[in-house]
Image 1: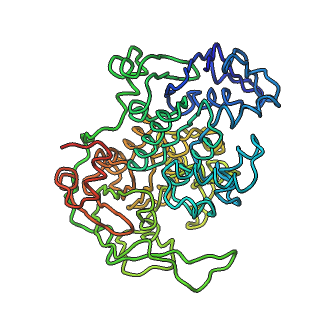
Image 2 (image 1 turned 90 degrees about the horizontal axis):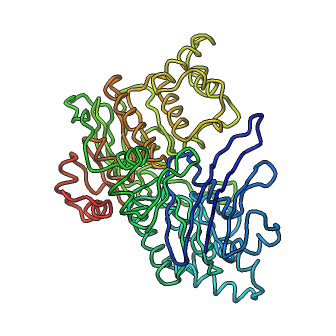
Image 3 (image 1 turned 45 degrees about the horizontal axis):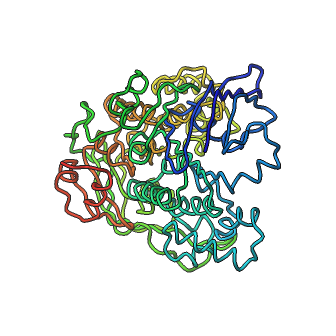
Length: 516
């Protein structure tokens, strides 16, 4: 069905043209699931976007061949390409919240490709959209049809994206990191959904990911990319069980597993750093631009726990469990709260999940790092700059990054900047909200090791929020489990992983593949 040979992509929107894909080759047969794996910046998404015809023709130079059912897509007229896009070839992107139009209802967006490629009347479009929403296993499809994207959870939005991509029954589905930011149970559901679609509809899938465990569970063949080049390819079992290239071995060795980082141990300090006592929180209801009187339901319900100096504590749960809201409540970022929160340190800080969304895109890294000092201290420019350089060095970046803007950095570099920013005021408590969920396995490993280093060398206590039980197992000595806003279980890592009491904890561990 798909035969790509010698694909070469060069970006020309700078003084020095940069080649991002070198001589890329791949074939996908009808009904086959093929994976492309590699770190951020390896060229995997760029190659997939070229296949889908979604790269600019003005500031990019492309050569080679992309044959889809014998038709050359690289040079086909735009008018013909538009007929293929959404009808024969569809794409599911990594972040559904930014891929969906926030001002259009779900039904309108699912129908869009069908509206373009068919002349069905409105009532038939609606029936097809609702049928497709049900097909991707969304409960209450009729109700979801009339909702907006912000009213759905991350997993539901990703199912909507898949429904929109499949509405025209495409022959090839390109899935670009569709499970990266999802928790383990939702991730497992999306993988099973894609398998079922492939099995029942015969849809071929080109699946792009940096998560090798997902690739292994879904694909029959895999292509490994590094710095724009294919370094290895073959059957999944062959590549995983007998990797030939050092880069592939390194990638496989970086997959988080249920193993402890040797230097992470239970803190023996009995001095408290944080006390959370019977805390509840809700968001105020918003209509248009105005808050209205009726209260939303509680997002966090009667949460209680204590953290001690020098410990790394995990807070786990699925999307929508209330863990991020609890983190924000602890730092005083929500108004509508109840209960008691006692801090035994000054100026605790937060590291957010999305480093790009957390950094001002119009400012340099130096300006961003110095901002807390400008607001909270009387440091002069020289002293602020010295502190910024010191913190960058601590997270493994040199001072040349001070003059760059966030868009000139990779995902891992941006997350290091966010960690440096959190350290500027010398906090003793950091709340890290999913700081590695969107990073590839090698960068994820680097950031985890950096957090351990900061914990050991600076004595910083870390509340590590995550849906990844493998990462939490590596990093944390005590763990809190949340579901539907309630802490259902808490205890030491051994108690939670080897002897879970709550059925929800058992289900989480089962979904993550943990066996004691």
